[in-house]
Image (cartoon, rainbow, N blue to C red; front, top):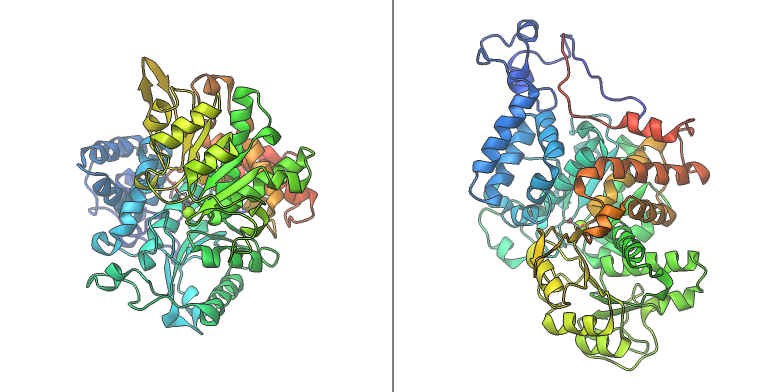
Length: 553
Ligand SMILES: O=C([O-])CC(=O)C(=O)O
Ligand SMILES: [Mg+2]
């Protein structure tokens, strides 16, 4: 990000003036144009006479935001603001992150994705599809901005834990990129959300007359792979150095695509690698809180998709770093899926699961697996609400003084248990975190602050580290470093409240530290194109965009 976008816009012929500037969300500043600016930019008469500072505009926005009677209405309100005045949107999000993140991100963005074709107002991002096969590069050429550094792409097949939402998945890249801006200070103009519509297998969408995506079944096989290849090439042609962040692809494709592209381009899969890092950070945090060691943990997963396997692989790497043999480390991670415990000798075990298919007799259900294996931690990545029921939580509490309960599925409606359930059924002994936020829980006069184990703690900082070092590749070592750095940011005061993650309001500082750790790896491993500055932390912090209105005169 060596050169920040121009922060001034003197009235040159190429620069929009007058009415046009009010229609450009990256340049509009609403009622914060000064009298002088209004004169020079030919805005006189197009605005009411009163002037408001940005702070006053923020106050007005929050007043209106809080008047909305539902979360979905709040979401619509925020999206309208994003499209009208991007700087003010970013400012409001940054200043009120704890209140607004659950709206523009999980859980409400899940609801917004489900309702996408019904609440649609204006297009955001780029809609690539089968329709443009052979011409993707021409279509990417239609995006109005030349300097894109981060592309977040989905094909909509596995949106959070909600399944196949086709083109409606667009809400997710939009939400993720809003967090790159708010949490890590990536400039909004450097962010490009993309959905690749290859159809949907969601019958209710196919039957919905208002559905905005292609109305046919998902394309699979060679035709799919060729389209993704064309997409990657087309992005690389226009934005050769951009990071391509894959989000919410189905398991069938997520692993394959990561494996295919990770050594060829600057890319990562957030659900596999970002989620892995945040879960590992949660384990590190829990160890710090209890004084335990990582290598002494035994982890049982509910769900063996991208997130679960990604977490398992990163935990293995972390244990190996602590001196454990890889085969031993793998035996610390056990998986259950729809067919019960994943064991050696079972028919049809996928390549991703095979390294975790251990010698054991078949076990049909999760509760029995807990009793047999006696895990110290259970991690839910199943997309199935309520699967950590009272019996499961009681069993964990019987086995462990401080059971680790991570219910990571999103949105809240898919969480394996609620925070209250986790604390109640473990007599307040659980160390709990969840993918979507839960509020404070009071139990017999004691207050618990559940952590949000969401990859939002990881991907913005990783992105900032990659973009500032101009790294060519993204490695697992970077995610390990991100996890360790995140855990290091938790303070003793956080532990006292039962938190294993830093508070959200510290997220910019946390992301900056993660970025430094990631960039240092890029520099040390020869992956960076930007030379290592004398003061990496100072350099990176200086690159972080702060949403302030630009001065035109
Ligand atoms: O988006 C989120 O909140 C976390 C995530 O990647 C997912 O659940 O797919
Ligand atoms: Mg995701």
